[in-house]
Image 1 (cartoon, rainbow, N blue to C red):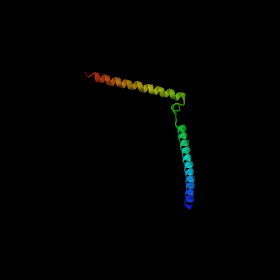
Image 2: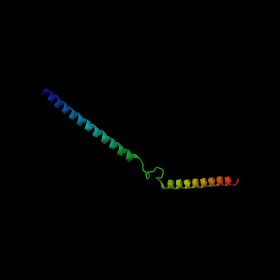
Image 3: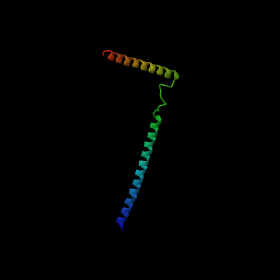
Image 4: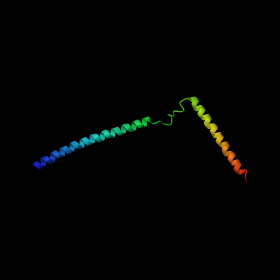
Length: 87
């Protein structure tokens, strides 16, 4: 009978330890979820660009990119013409 009581008390201790472990797991899980949500909120999306906040800056940037594109096309055409003129 004494052995049964020891087993019973060990069983109760195991249950209390299990509950503590479960509470700790739940707490860790909620912290992970909270951290994940905060990171998601802090990251910028496509519409949250810093450089395009001002319309004037956006226009300047667009013009600059268009000029760079035209210059790149001219370089490609010049290189193609120089290669084909050798034949």
